[in-house]
Image (cartoon, rainbow, N blue to C red; front, side, top):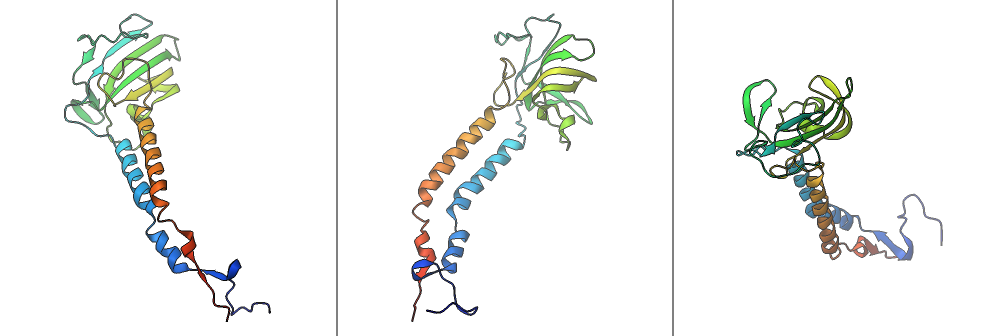
Length: 211
């Protein structure tokens, strides 16, 4: 036995070397990329891109200042009253005149930073297509301090588009993402079981002739 020279092949233990052709073939035909990554990409695009349906969305529309409109405040009693349910709900669009079918319902609950007055707003909006989230109310779902109607508000701004009249009961906008995560988890599970048959690392090595 002699030490390998720079011209000799260094092989793994048990006299086998890596079959790079088999490895490259597995990578190029990886079922993980085909069965998981492509569907996940499509699902993410469907979740992020706001689809504007022709018929719009129905939303509750009301405003309550300092609890003056009990029908608008929480706890909200969802009786689908024609007085506060707009079907379809229409909203304005930046840089455009008139009203357009909304794509999301919104709810604002909090108090004004300067006066301490409480405010509850239920309504609807649509994405105007601008590039920044600070100008699109339906992209700003969060709790904290935000700018609304030229004043700072402490509270929660929530948007939803998964059902008509979804701005009734207190809620967030995480339902579509929870559904997306469930689908991704299902895809990962099915992919791992189906790819186990094709994932054969033993074929990545070939015996080396020591002679």
